[in-house]
Length: 565
Image (cartoon, rainbow, N blue to C red; front, side, top):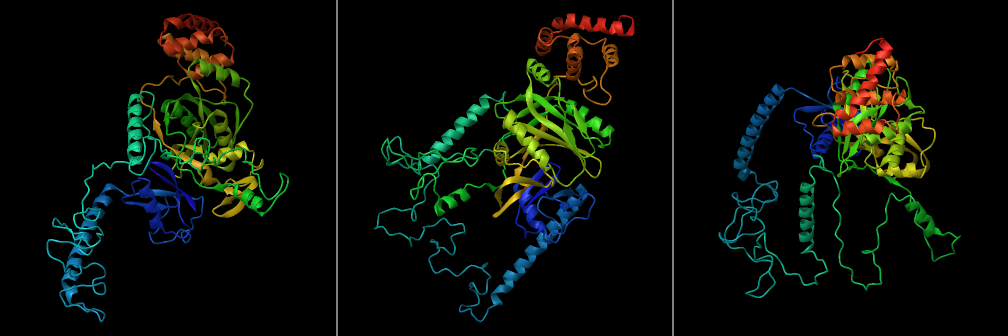
Protein backbone atom coordinates (compact mmCIF):
# COMPACT_ATOMS: atom_id res chain seq x y z
CA UNK A 1 0.00 0.00 0.00
CA UNK A 2 0.96 3.66 -0.38
CA UNK A 3 0.38 6.01 2.55
CA UNK A 4 1.16 9.71 2.96
CA UNK A 5 2.97 10.91 6.08
CA UNK A 6 2.94 14.59 7.04
CA UNK A 7 5.87 15.81 9.12
CA UNK A 8 7.68 19.07 9.81
CA UNK A 9 9.60 18.70 6.52
CA UNK A 10 6.41 18.25 4.44
CA UNK A 11 4.33 15.38 3.11
CA UNK A 12 6.08 12.21 1.93
CA UNK A 13 4.70 9.07 0.30
CA UNK A 14 5.77 5.64 1.55
CA UNK A 15 5.30 2.42 -0.40
CA UNK A 16 5.04 -0.38 2.17
CA UNK A 17 3.62 -3.95 2.25
CA UNK A 18 0.12 -4.48 3.61
CA UNK A 19 1.27 -6.73 6.47
CA UNK A 20 3.80 -4.21 7.82
CA UNK A 21 3.82 -2.86 11.37
CA UNK A 22 4.19 0.70 12.59
CA UNK A 23 7.89 0.13 13.25
CA UNK A 24 8.45 -0.58 9.54
CA UNK A 25 7.07 2.87 8.70
CA UNK A 26 9.76 4.46 10.90
CA UNK A 27 12.41 2.47 9.00
CA UNK A 28 11.05 3.89 5.72
CA UNK A 29 11.11 7.43 7.13
CA UNK A 30 14.72 7.06 8.26
CA UNK A 31 15.56 5.96 4.71
CA UNK A 32 14.11 9.31 3.51
CA UNK A 33 16.41 11.22 5.95
CA UNK A 34 13.48 12.31 8.12
CA UNK A 35 14.23 12.84 11.81
CA UNK A 36 12.10 10.42 13.85
CA UNK A 37 13.85 10.72 17.22
CA UNK A 38 11.30 11.01 20.02
CA UNK A 39 8.39 11.09 17.56
CA UNK A 40 5.36 8.89 17.05
CA UNK A 41 2.75 8.26 14.37
CA UNK A 42 -0.91 9.18 14.78
CA UNK A 43 -3.95 9.33 12.53
CA UNK A 44 -4.46 13.00 13.46
CA UNK A 45 -2.26 15.38 15.50
CA UNK A 46 -4.68 15.05 18.43
CA UNK A 47 -5.20 11.28 18.39
CA UNK A 48 -3.31 8.87 20.62
CA UNK A 49 -0.06 7.62 19.07
CA UNK A 50 -0.03 4.26 17.33
CA UNK A 51 1.77 1.33 18.96
CA UNK A 52 5.05 0.25 17.36
CA UNK A 53 4.08 -3.43 17.19
CA UNK A 54 0.59 -2.97 15.73
CA UNK A 55 0.02 -3.82 12.09
CA UNK A 56 -1.27 -1.18 9.69
CA UNK A 57 -4.51 -3.08 9.09
CA UNK A 58 -5.15 -3.45 12.84
CA UNK A 59 -4.58 0.30 13.26
CA UNK A 60 -7.21 1.03 10.58
CA UNK A 61 -4.74 2.42 8.04
CA UNK A 62 -5.55 1.79 4.38
CA UNK A 63 -3.82 2.61 1.12
CA UNK A 64 -4.05 6.34 0.39
CA UNK A 65 -4.53 7.43 4.02
CA UNK A 66 -2.72 10.44 5.48
CA UNK A 67 -1.12 10.04 8.92
CA UNK A 68 0.94 12.46 10.99
CA UNK A 69 4.41 12.30 12.55
CA UNK A 70 4.04 13.98 15.94
CA UNK A 71 6.93 14.64 18.30
CA UNK A 72 7.68 15.26 21.96
CA UNK A 73 9.60 18.02 23.73
CA UNK A 74 13.34 18.28 24.15
CA UNK A 75 13.08 17.35 27.81
CA UNK A 76 11.43 14.10 26.88
CA UNK A 77 14.16 13.43 24.37
CA UNK A 78 16.89 14.05 26.94
CA UNK A 79 15.21 11.85 29.51
CA UNK A 80 14.65 9.11 26.96
CA UNK A 81 18.26 9.34 25.84
CA UNK A 82 19.45 8.99 29.45
CA UNK A 83 17.15 6.01 29.88
CA UNK A 84 18.51 4.48 26.69
CA UNK A 85 22.11 4.87 27.87
CA UNK A 86 21.30 3.28 31.21
CA UNK A 87 19.50 0.44 29.44
CA UNK A 88 22.48 -0.05 27.13
CA UNK A 89 24.83 -0.25 30.12
CA UNK A 90 22.59 -2.83 31.76
CA UNK A 91 22.47 -4.83 28.53
CA UNK A 92 26.26 -4.79 28.27
CA UNK A 93 26.60 -6.05 31.83
CA UNK A 94 24.13 -8.84 31.12
CA UNK A 95 26.03 -9.82 27.97
CA UNK A 96 29.33 -9.93 29.88
CA UNK A 97 27.77 -12.12 32.58
CA UNK A 98 26.33 -14.43 29.92
CA UNK A 99 29.71 -14.70 28.21
CA UNK A 100 31.38 -15.58 31.49
CA UNK A 101 28.80 -18.27 32.23
CA UNK A 102 28.61 -19.56 28.65
CA UNK A 103 31.56 -21.93 29.16
CA UNK A 104 29.50 -24.09 31.49
CA UNK A 105 26.48 -24.18 29.17
CA UNK A 106 27.35 -27.32 27.26
CA UNK A 107 24.58 -29.06 25.37
CA UNK A 108 24.17 -32.71 24.43
CA UNK A 109 25.46 -31.98 20.91
CA UNK A 110 28.73 -30.38 22.08
CA UNK A 111 31.85 -32.54 21.49
CA UNK A 112 34.49 -30.09 22.69
CA UNK A 113 35.97 -29.17 26.06
CA UNK A 114 34.53 -26.57 28.41
CA UNK A 115 36.89 -23.81 27.24
CA UNK A 116 35.85 -24.13 23.58
CA UNK A 117 32.66 -23.09 21.77
CA UNK A 118 30.64 -24.32 18.83
CA UNK A 119 27.44 -23.42 16.98
CA UNK A 120 25.38 -25.45 19.50
CA UNK A 121 26.43 -23.62 22.66
CA UNK A 122 27.48 -20.15 21.49
CA UNK A 123 24.40 -19.08 19.48
CA UNK A 124 26.80 -18.06 16.70
CA UNK A 125 28.34 -15.43 19.02
CA UNK A 126 31.37 -17.32 20.32
CA UNK A 127 34.69 -18.00 18.62
CA UNK A 128 35.60 -21.51 17.58
CA UNK A 129 39.01 -22.71 18.70
CA UNK A 130 41.50 -22.20 15.87
CA UNK A 131 44.18 -24.82 15.15
CA UNK A 132 46.58 -22.70 13.08
CA UNK A 133 49.68 -20.81 14.36
CA UNK A 134 49.31 -17.46 16.11
CA UNK A 135 50.78 -15.46 13.21
CA UNK A 136 48.22 -16.86 10.70
CA UNK A 137 44.49 -16.42 10.20
CA UNK A 138 41.50 -18.44 8.97
CA UNK A 139 37.80 -17.82 8.09
CA UNK A 140 36.94 -18.34 11.77
CA UNK A 141 39.06 -15.43 13.06
CA UNK A 142 39.49 -13.26 9.97
CA UNK A 143 37.26 -10.50 11.41
CA UNK A 144 39.83 -9.91 14.19
CA UNK A 145 42.62 -7.36 13.87
CA UNK A 146 45.36 -9.37 12.19
CA UNK A 147 48.80 -8.23 11.01
CA UNK A 148 50.53 -11.57 10.48
CA UNK A 149 50.90 -13.79 7.45
CA UNK A 150 47.73 -14.99 5.70
CA UNK A 151 47.10 -18.68 5.20
CA UNK A 152 46.84 -19.56 1.53
CA UNK A 153 44.14 -22.24 1.77
CA UNK A 154 42.47 -21.09 -1.48
CA UNK A 155 45.55 -20.59 -3.66
CA UNK A 156 45.77 -22.83 -6.72
CA UNK A 157 48.90 -21.37 -8.31
CA UNK A 158 52.47 -22.78 -8.01
CA UNK A 159 54.98 -21.40 -5.50
CA UNK A 160 56.11 -17.86 -6.38
CA UNK A 161 52.77 -16.92 -7.96
CA UNK A 162 50.27 -14.34 -6.77
CA UNK A 163 46.47 -14.22 -6.67
CA UNK A 164 43.73 -12.19 -4.98
CA UNK A 165 43.83 -14.60 -2.02
CA UNK A 166 47.47 -14.13 -1.07
CA UNK A 167 48.10 -10.48 -1.93
CA UNK A 168 46.53 -7.38 -0.50
CA UNK A 169 45.74 -4.97 -3.34
CA UNK A 170 46.15 -1.26 -2.41
CA UNK A 171 43.21 1.05 -3.01
CA UNK A 172 44.88 3.08 -5.77
CA UNK A 173 46.25 0.23 -7.90
CA UNK A 174 45.45 0.66 -11.62
CA UNK A 175 45.12 -2.38 -13.86
CA UNK A 176 46.13 -2.34 -17.49
CA UNK A 177 43.22 -2.87 -19.86
CA UNK A 178 43.63 -5.41 -22.67
CA UNK A 179 41.11 -3.84 -25.08
CA UNK A 180 41.48 -1.00 -27.56
CA UNK A 181 41.10 2.75 -26.90
CA UNK A 182 37.40 2.88 -27.90
CA UNK A 183 36.21 -0.16 -25.90
CA UNK A 184 35.06 -0.29 -22.29
CA UNK A 185 35.58 -2.97 -19.65
CA UNK A 186 34.81 -3.44 -15.96
CA UNK A 187 38.17 -1.90 -15.01
CA UNK A 188 37.83 1.42 -16.85
CA UNK A 189 34.08 1.90 -16.69
CA UNK A 190 34.36 3.25 -13.14
CA UNK A 191 37.08 5.70 -14.24
CA UNK A 192 34.84 7.03 -16.99
CA UNK A 193 31.88 7.47 -14.67
CA UNK A 194 34.03 9.27 -12.08
CA UNK A 195 35.43 11.54 -14.80
CA UNK A 196 31.93 12.43 -15.99
CA UNK A 197 30.83 13.12 -12.42
CA UNK A 198 33.78 15.47 -11.88
CA UNK A 199 33.06 17.26 -15.15
CA UNK A 200 29.39 17.66 -14.23
CA UNK A 201 30.34 19.00 -10.77
CA UNK A 202 32.70 21.52 -12.39
CA UNK A 203 29.98 22.69 -14.76
CA UNK A 204 27.55 22.99 -11.84
CA UNK A 205 30.05 25.12 -9.94
CA UNK A 206 30.41 27.42 -12.95
CA UNK A 207 26.63 27.83 -13.23
CA UNK A 208 25.84 28.49 -9.57
CA UNK A 209 24.25 31.82 -10.49
CA UNK A 210 21.66 30.06 -12.66
CA UNK A 211 21.09 27.02 -10.42
CA UNK A 212 19.37 26.69 -7.07
CA UNK A 213 20.47 25.04 -3.85
CA UNK A 214 18.25 22.03 -4.52
CA UNK A 215 19.98 18.75 -5.35
CA UNK A 216 18.02 17.09 -8.17
CA UNK A 217 17.34 13.36 -7.79
CA UNK A 218 18.39 12.09 -11.19
CA UNK A 219 19.02 8.43 -11.88
CA UNK A 220 22.56 7.64 -12.98
CA UNK A 221 22.75 6.87 -16.70
CA UNK A 222 24.30 3.65 -17.84
CA UNK A 223 27.51 3.90 -19.86
CA UNK A 224 27.25 2.38 -23.28
CA UNK A 225 29.59 -0.57 -23.78
CA UNK A 226 31.51 -1.46 -26.93
CA UNK A 227 29.56 -3.31 -29.62
CA UNK A 228 31.26 -6.37 -31.16
CA UNK A 229 29.50 -6.33 -34.57
CA UNK A 230 30.30 -4.42 -37.74
CA UNK A 231 29.34 -0.80 -38.52
CA UNK A 232 26.14 -1.74 -40.40
CA UNK A 233 24.77 -4.25 -37.87
CA UNK A 234 22.58 -3.63 -34.82
CA UNK A 235 22.34 -5.24 -31.39
CA UNK A 236 20.49 -4.68 -28.12
CA UNK A 237 23.36 -2.49 -26.93
CA UNK A 238 23.18 0.12 -29.70
CA UNK A 239 19.43 0.07 -30.40
CA UNK A 240 17.43 2.81 -28.63
CA UNK A 241 15.59 1.62 -25.56
CA UNK A 242 11.81 1.66 -25.49
CA UNK A 243 10.30 4.62 -23.67
CA UNK A 244 7.62 3.35 -21.25
CA UNK A 245 5.88 6.75 -21.46
CA UNK A 246 5.82 6.91 -25.26
CA UNK A 247 2.42 8.03 -26.55
CA UNK A 248 2.50 6.24 -29.90
CA UNK A 249 2.36 2.46 -29.34
CA UNK A 250 5.10 0.47 -31.10
CA UNK A 251 4.28 -1.50 -34.25
CA UNK A 252 4.70 -5.26 -34.43
CA UNK A 253 5.27 -7.47 -37.45
CA UNK A 254 4.43 -11.05 -36.56
CA UNK A 255 5.93 -13.90 -38.60
CA UNK A 256 2.92 -16.14 -37.89
CA UNK A 257 0.37 -14.19 -39.98
CA UNK A 258 -0.27 -11.17 -42.15
CA UNK A 259 -0.69 -7.53 -41.08
CA UNK A 260 -4.42 -7.96 -40.29
CA UNK A 261 -4.13 -11.29 -38.43
CA UNK A 262 -3.60 -12.14 -34.81
CA UNK A 263 -2.20 -14.96 -32.68
CA UNK A 264 -1.46 -15.82 -29.07
CA UNK A 265 1.94 -14.11 -29.25
CA UNK A 266 0.31 -10.90 -30.48
CA UNK A 267 -2.32 -11.03 -27.73
CA UNK A 268 0.37 -11.47 -25.07
CA UNK A 269 2.38 -8.65 -26.63
CA UNK A 270 -0.63 -6.30 -26.50
CA UNK A 271 -1.20 -7.25 -22.86
CA UNK A 272 2.43 -6.37 -22.07
CA UNK A 273 1.86 -2.85 -23.44
CA UNK A 274 -0.68 -2.07 -20.73
CA UNK A 275 0.58 0.42 -18.17
CA UNK A 276 1.86 -0.93 -14.86
CA UNK A 277 1.38 1.76 -12.23
CA UNK A 278 4.35 2.58 -10.05
CA UNK A 279 5.21 5.53 -7.85
CA UNK A 280 7.73 8.08 -9.12
CA UNK A 281 10.36 9.31 -6.67
CA UNK A 282 12.17 11.96 -8.73
CA UNK A 283 10.23 15.06 -9.86
CA UNK A 284 11.20 17.00 -12.98
CA UNK A 285 11.32 20.15 -10.84
CA UNK A 286 14.13 19.93 -8.24
CA UNK A 287 12.39 22.50 -6.04
CA UNK A 288 10.30 25.68 -5.82
CA UNK A 289 11.63 29.03 -4.55
CA UNK A 290 8.55 31.03 -3.53
CA UNK A 291 8.34 34.75 -2.77
CA UNK A 292 6.41 34.41 0.47
CA UNK A 293 5.28 38.04 0.33
CA UNK A 294 2.90 37.24 -2.53
CA UNK A 295 2.05 33.87 -0.96
CA UNK A 296 1.06 35.61 2.29
CA UNK A 297 -1.41 37.83 0.40
CA UNK A 298 -3.03 34.67 -0.96
CA UNK A 299 -2.99 33.04 2.48
CA UNK A 300 -4.35 36.04 4.42
CA UNK A 301 -7.44 36.21 2.23
CA UNK A 302 -8.23 32.55 2.90
CA UNK A 303 -7.64 32.97 6.62
CA UNK A 304 -9.99 35.95 6.64
CA UNK A 305 -12.62 33.72 5.03
CA UNK A 306 -11.72 30.95 7.56
CA UNK A 307 -11.05 28.64 4.59
CA UNK A 308 -14.80 28.54 3.92
CA UNK A 309 -14.13 29.82 0.39
CA UNK A 310 -11.35 28.23 -1.66
CA UNK A 311 -9.17 30.07 -4.20
CA UNK A 312 -6.69 29.28 -6.96
CA UNK A 313 -4.19 31.30 -8.94
CA UNK A 314 -1.42 31.09 -11.53
CA UNK A 315 2.24 31.41 -10.52
CA UNK A 316 4.50 33.66 -12.58
CA UNK A 317 8.28 33.69 -12.38
CA UNK A 318 11.11 31.89 -14.15
CA UNK A 319 12.73 28.48 -14.61
CA UNK A 320 16.38 28.06 -13.67
CA UNK A 321 18.75 25.92 -15.72
CA UNK A 322 18.36 22.94 -13.39
CA UNK A 323 14.55 23.13 -13.65
CA UNK A 324 13.95 24.89 -10.34
CA UNK A 325 10.90 27.16 -10.29
CA UNK A 326 11.17 30.74 -8.98
CA UNK A 327 7.79 32.29 -8.09
CA UNK A 328 7.57 36.11 -8.06
CA UNK A 329 3.83 36.84 -8.48
CA UNK A 330 0.39 35.20 -8.24
CA UNK A 331 -2.45 36.12 -10.59
CA UNK A 332 -5.96 35.09 -9.52
CA UNK A 333 -8.17 34.55 -12.60
CA UNK A 334 -12.00 34.63 -12.58
CA UNK A 335 -13.24 31.62 -10.62
CA UNK A 336 -16.25 30.13 -8.90
CA UNK A 337 -15.37 29.22 -5.33
CA UNK A 338 -17.12 26.91 -2.89
CA UNK A 339 -16.18 25.53 0.51
CA UNK A 340 -14.70 22.33 -0.94
CA UNK A 341 -13.27 23.23 -4.36
CA UNK A 342 -12.83 25.96 -6.97
CA UNK A 343 -13.76 26.10 -10.66
CA UNK A 344 -11.90 28.24 -13.22
CA UNK A 345 -14.05 30.52 -15.40
CA UNK A 346 -13.38 32.16 -18.75
CA UNK A 347 -10.84 34.98 -18.42
CA UNK A 348 -11.52 37.87 -20.85
CA UNK A 349 -8.05 39.38 -20.28
CA UNK A 350 -6.13 36.11 -20.07
CA UNK A 351 -4.10 36.76 -23.23
CA UNK A 352 -3.35 40.32 -22.11
CA UNK A 353 -2.05 39.01 -18.78
CA UNK A 354 0.34 36.72 -20.66
CA UNK A 355 1.57 39.71 -22.69
CA UNK A 356 2.01 41.81 -19.55
CA UNK A 357 3.99 39.14 -17.71
CA UNK A 358 6.13 38.56 -20.78
CA UNK A 359 7.02 42.27 -20.81
CA UNK A 360 8.01 41.97 -17.15
CA UNK A 361 10.30 39.03 -17.98
CA UNK A 362 8.02 36.47 -16.33
CA UNK A 363 6.40 33.27 -17.53
CA UNK A 364 3.76 30.94 -16.11
CA UNK A 365 5.60 28.41 -13.94
CA UNK A 366 2.81 26.81 -11.90
CA UNK A 367 -0.51 27.18 -10.18
CA UNK A 368 -1.72 27.31 -6.59
CA UNK A 369 -4.98 26.24 -4.99
CA UNK A 370 -6.33 25.76 -1.49
CA UNK A 371 -8.44 23.08 0.11
CA UNK A 372 -9.91 22.47 3.58
CA UNK A 373 -8.65 19.86 6.01
CA UNK A 374 -8.90 16.37 4.47
CA UNK A 375 -7.10 13.02 4.45
CA UNK A 376 -5.75 13.14 0.87
CA UNK A 377 -3.34 15.51 -0.82
CA UNK A 378 -4.91 15.93 -4.27
CA UNK A 379 -8.25 14.72 -5.59
CA UNK A 380 -8.74 12.90 -8.88
CA UNK A 381 -10.00 16.03 -10.66
CA UNK A 382 -7.08 18.10 -9.32
CA UNK A 383 -4.58 15.52 -10.59
CA UNK A 384 -6.17 15.61 -14.06
CA UNK A 385 -6.10 19.43 -14.08
CA UNK A 386 -2.45 19.44 -13.00
CA UNK A 387 -1.55 16.93 -15.73
CA UNK A 388 -3.17 19.20 -18.33
CA UNK A 389 -1.14 22.17 -17.10
CA UNK A 390 2.15 20.22 -17.03
CA UNK A 391 1.64 18.98 -20.59
CA UNK A 392 0.80 22.50 -21.73
CA UNK A 393 3.42 24.59 -19.91
CA UNK A 394 6.31 22.13 -19.47
CA UNK A 395 7.44 19.28 -17.26
CA UNK A 396 8.83 21.65 -14.58
CA UNK A 397 5.38 23.22 -14.05
CA UNK A 398 4.78 23.04 -10.29
CA UNK A 399 1.65 22.87 -8.13
CA UNK A 400 1.46 24.67 -4.77
CA UNK A 401 -1.22 23.55 -2.32
CA UNK A 402 -2.28 25.70 0.64
CA UNK A 403 -4.17 23.64 3.20
CA UNK A 404 -5.22 23.87 6.83
CA UNK A 405 -4.77 21.16 9.44
CA UNK A 406 -6.96 20.21 12.38
CA UNK A 407 -5.19 22.71 14.62
CA UNK A 408 -6.01 25.62 12.30
CA UNK A 409 -2.45 26.06 10.97
CA UNK A 410 -1.90 26.53 7.24
CA UNK A 411 0.66 24.50 5.25
CA UNK A 412 2.18 25.36 1.87
CA UNK A 413 3.49 22.34 -0.06
CA UNK A 414 4.63 21.72 -3.64
CA UNK A 415 3.83 18.74 -5.86
CA UNK A 416 3.90 17.47 -9.44
CA UNK A 417 2.18 14.58 -11.19
CA UNK A 418 4.13 11.60 -12.49
CA UNK A 419 5.11 10.83 -16.08
CA UNK A 420 2.47 8.10 -16.19
CA UNK A 421 -0.21 10.68 -15.38
CA UNK A 422 1.10 12.91 -18.18
CA UNK A 423 0.95 10.01 -20.63
CA UNK A 424 -2.61 9.11 -19.60
CA UNK A 425 -3.66 12.74 -20.08
CA UNK A 426 -1.99 13.00 -23.49
CA UNK A 427 -3.68 9.85 -24.71
CA UNK A 428 -7.06 10.99 -23.27
CA UNK A 429 -7.35 7.95 -20.98
CA UNK A 430 -8.92 9.88 -18.08
CA UNK A 431 -12.68 9.55 -17.84
CA UNK A 432 -14.69 12.77 -18.13
CA UNK A 433 -16.65 12.07 -14.94
CA UNK A 434 -14.75 11.49 -11.70
CA UNK A 435 -16.96 10.49 -8.77
CA UNK A 436 -14.38 9.23 -6.26
CA UNK A 437 -11.70 11.75 -5.17
CA UNK A 438 -9.38 8.88 -4.08
CA UNK A 439 -9.61 6.92 -7.35
CA UNK A 440 -9.05 8.10 -10.92
CA UNK A 441 -11.44 6.48 -13.37
CA UNK A 442 -9.76 5.44 -16.65
CA UNK A 443 -11.14 4.48 -20.04
CA UNK A 444 -8.83 1.46 -20.41
CA UNK A 445 -7.54 -0.84 -17.65
CA UNK A 446 -4.06 -0.63 -16.13
CA UNK A 447 -2.17 -2.91 -13.76
CA UNK A 448 -2.11 -1.74 -10.14
CA UNK A 449 0.08 -3.96 -7.94
CA UNK A 450 -0.55 -6.92 -10.26
CA UNK A 451 -4.33 -6.40 -10.49
CA UNK A 452 -6.06 -5.08 -13.61
CA UNK A 453 -8.35 -2.13 -12.86
CA UNK A 454 -9.86 1.03 -14.35
CA UNK A 455 -9.97 2.83 -10.98
CA UNK A 456 -6.38 3.83 -10.19
CA UNK A 457 -5.16 4.98 -6.79
CA UNK A 458 -4.31 8.71 -6.78
CA UNK A 459 -1.11 8.20 -4.75
CA UNK A 460 0.65 6.59 -7.74
CA UNK A 461 0.48 9.90 -9.63
CA UNK A 462 1.62 12.39 -6.94
CA UNK A 463 5.31 13.40 -6.68
CA UNK A 464 6.58 15.57 -3.81
CA UNK A 465 8.64 18.69 -4.66
CA UNK A 466 10.78 20.55 -2.06
CA UNK A 467 9.75 24.16 -1.40
CA UNK A 468 11.79 27.00 0.08
CA UNK A 469 11.42 30.72 0.65
CA UNK A 470 13.04 32.86 -2.02
CA UNK A 471 15.98 34.80 -0.67
CA UNK A 472 16.60 38.45 -1.43
CA UNK A 473 14.31 41.40 -2.11
CA UNK A 474 10.94 40.83 -3.75
CA UNK A 475 10.39 42.08 -7.29
CA UNK A 476 6.96 43.47 -6.48
CA UNK A 477 5.09 45.04 -3.58
CA UNK A 478 1.65 43.68 -2.76
CA UNK A 479 -0.46 46.50 -1.32
CA UNK A 480 -3.04 47.07 -4.09
CA UNK A 481 -6.30 45.03 -3.87
CA UNK A 482 -6.13 41.71 -5.72
CA UNK A 483 -8.09 41.25 -8.93
CA UNK A 484 -11.23 39.10 -9.33
CA UNK A 485 -12.00 39.07 -5.62
CA UNK A 486 -15.21 40.09 -3.89
CA UNK A 487 -15.38 43.07 -3.86
CA UNK A 488 -13.47 43.89 -7.06
CA UNK A 489 -10.99 46.80 -7.12
CA UNK A 490 -12.51 50.13 -8.23
CA UNK A 491 -11.27 53.61 -9.14
CA UNK A 492 -11.66 54.63 -5.51
CA UNK A 493 -9.02 52.01 -4.68
CA UNK A 494 -6.79 53.72 -7.24
CA UNK A 495 -7.23 57.05 -5.44
CA UNK A 496 -6.48 55.47 -2.06
CA UNK A 497 -3.41 53.73 -3.48
CA UNK A 498 -2.12 57.05 -4.88
CA UNK A 499 -2.66 58.88 -1.59
CA UNK A 500 -0.97 56.12 0.44
CA UNK A 501 2.06 56.10 -1.89
CA UNK A 502 2.36 59.81 -2.68
CA UNK A 503 5.77 59.97 -0.99
CA UNK A 504 7.10 56.93 -2.88
CA UNK A 505 9.17 57.07 -6.06
CA UNK A 506 7.54 56.25 -9.42
CA UNK A 507 9.47 52.96 -9.45
CA UNK A 508 7.97 51.79 -6.14
CA UNK A 509 4.56 53.13 -7.18
CA UNK A 510 4.40 50.99 -10.31
CA UNK A 511 6.16 47.93 -8.83
CA UNK A 512 2.89 46.35 -7.71
CA UNK A 513 1.79 43.42 -9.87
CA UNK A 514 -1.90 43.70 -8.94
CA UNK A 515 -1.81 47.45 -9.62
CA UNK A 516 -0.48 46.77 -13.13
CA UNK A 517 -3.30 44.26 -13.67
CA UNK A 518 -5.80 46.93 -12.58
CA UNK A 519 -4.36 49.46 -15.05
CA UNK A 520 -4.56 46.85 -17.81
CA UNK A 521 -8.10 45.73 -16.97
CA UNK A 522 -9.49 49.30 -16.80
CA UNK A 523 -7.68 50.46 -20.00
CA UNK A 524 -5.91 53.31 -18.23
CA UNK A 525 -2.83 52.64 -20.37
CA UNK A 526 -2.49 51.01 -23.77
CA UNK A 527 -1.03 47.51 -23.83
CA UNK A 528 0.93 47.97 -27.06
CA UNK A 529 2.25 51.53 -26.61
CA UNK A 530 2.41 52.34 -22.88
CA UNK A 531 2.99 49.09 -21.04
CA UNK A 532 6.25 48.19 -22.84
CA UNK A 533 7.82 51.41 -21.48
CA UNK A 534 6.33 50.88 -18.00
CA UNK A 535 7.59 47.30 -17.78
CA UNK A 536 11.01 48.26 -19.11
CA UNK A 537 11.29 50.95 -16.43
CA UNK A 538 10.38 48.43 -13.72
CA UNK A 539 12.93 45.88 -14.99
CA UNK A 540 15.71 48.46 -15.30
CA UNK A 541 14.94 49.96 -11.86
CA UNK A 542 14.97 53.56 -13.13
CA UNK A 543 12.26 55.96 -11.94
CA UNK A 544 12.93 58.60 -14.62
CA UNK A 545 11.34 56.36 -17.27
CA UNK A 546 8.14 56.20 -15.21
CA UNK A 547 7.78 59.88 -14.28
CA UNK A 548 5.47 60.69 -17.21
CA UNK A 549 3.13 57.79 -16.47
CA UNK A 550 3.18 58.73 -12.78
CA UNK A 551 1.92 62.22 -13.66
CA UNK A 552 -0.87 60.75 -15.81
CA UNK A 553 -2.07 58.61 -12.90
CA UNK A 554 -1.84 61.63 -10.62
CA UNK A 555 -4.02 63.64 -13.00
CA UNK A 556 -6.54 60.80 -13.20
CA UNK A 557 -6.74 60.65 -9.41
CA UNK A 558 -7.11 64.42 -9.26
CA UNK A 559 -10.17 64.23 -11.48
CA UNK A 560 -11.66 61.56 -9.22
CA UNK A 561 -11.26 63.39 -5.91
CA UNK A 562 -11.63 66.94 -7.26
CA UNK A 563 -8.16 68.33 -6.53
CA UNK A 564 -4.50 67.53 -7.21
CA UNK A 565 -2.18 65.63 -4.91
